[in-house]
Length: 189
Image (cartoon, rainbow, N blue to C red; front, side):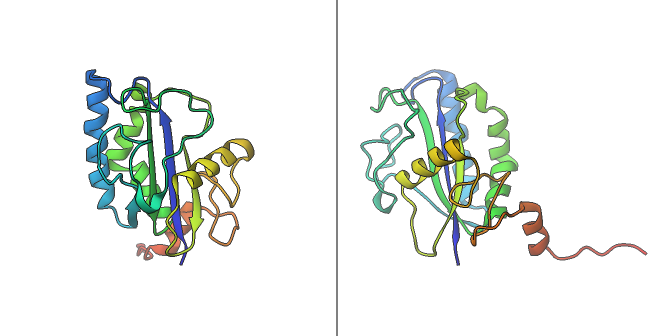
């Protein structure tokens, strides 16, 4: 059964190493969001650096997730002192659980504040695609899919929650999936 890969990328207003309260707040909220998402139904895994060090993105050992990569439009630093980005790469059982995790709860609260921390770049900040069971997407996969989404819009190869595709490549609707996976509600006569 295919799984949903989800790559997110954002350019921060200040470097990860910035000791300012806003940067610390971003880290604190981010750590809480990761803990919550890791418990969400449908969550399978996410890319985590072996050393777990903050800001060590380019130098980190990401194991099966591959070498860390960023989109061509990222023009800020690449060292622990200068990197000004946030990126995630995760695997999900399906569209609906990933959508729910992103757009509800603590992550939704963080999304509401994203412009406190992130620049508006004019580029997409996330992309979804399907992978075969047992396949671990790489950072480079995420980057190439995000760049494809930017250049061509949603397609079976790279899509958004708002214009999703089913694993077989047909257009999908998250609401339809929710109806397929939920039990019917009883109505009063």
